[in-house]
Image 1: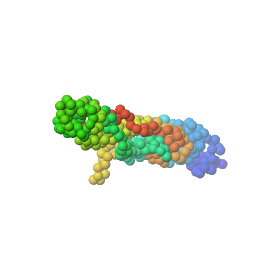
Image 2: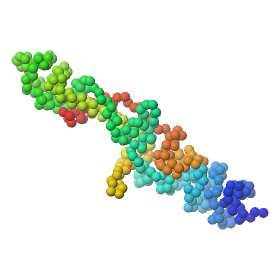
Image 3: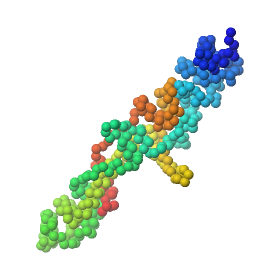
Length: 367
């Protein structure tokens, strides 16, 4: 007849031997109660308890903890199918120490700081993984990647206007109108201009007012009325102010693309707030003689994200250690449709007011 020594050896043995013990004691708790009574806790190996036992008895981990069996436990020695269950139990029991273990041992890209848990990025564009992707059309993932890479993605509107008077001059605020007036006066003011080259009614009226034939001049008192006259300005933009016309095209093109870029940038940054609670920051570090800047971003609710992952993978061998990174476990949750990736409607054109603001902001850089 088997004695306690036999049962202890069988408990630590293979699955067939373990089952011999269970046929006598029915469940691990009954056997361990005897072990505790005899003071033989150090003689048993709780790593051999099969994951199914913890599924059948949700209080088993609490029992092991209360009786000292979990002191100095090595998570990696647990069966893969048990690790997520154990980590979830630990997270609920003592979240601070559990998450410290996760950051120190299981995930390589998360660091705890005084104000939360921060994700270290290989590059800013790594965050594009959090955005929805479409195979056959431009997607939020594409936009996010280009925004985060700080690329020239937005210089795609090459012919943004065919009417610089309507789309630039008419959009100028008072300060820039004054600047334009000064430019015109510096360029062609108080100079004889031929009525044969400029035939609009505005110029004929000027010539008549000035009592001249064949020629007229743009004077200080005329320049603002000139700017208000679309026909007259367009004639000058084709003639003596042709250089100005080229600059106005550049202003609109850059304002149009800049406004579109700002709009997309804001959508990406607003979208990141679903999972993160800070802007991307960069920390300077030295690698040998090379200075590098490592990007970081604060995770909005790291404990919750870990908990959701563990709950979704109870009994699975897809452990936190298997992925080894926060982005890895989030990818898994996206694939399982537990979390939905960030999405937004990509605009076909920039917002009108943003373009108007950009025009007035950059105008004096060109003119």
